[in-house]
Length: 52
Image (cartoon, rainbow, N blue to C red; front, top):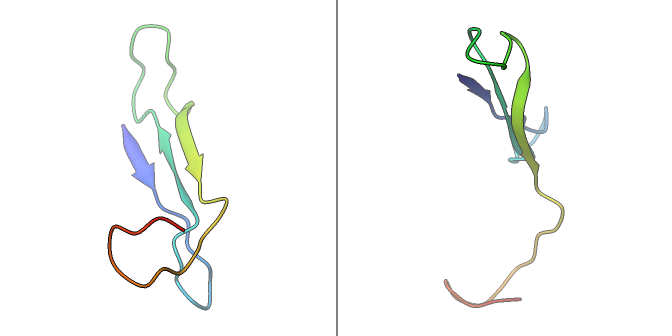
């Protein structure tokens, strides 16, 4: 399975990720997207571990 990590063209800010099957396996076909995730919200906090 391969994975790609889209970033903003100018800032290289992480936008999300997508996994794609690199070969046929069981009922998953080569090229089929198997998972994806997106960053929907960001915030700034005063210290590590603090929740916004």
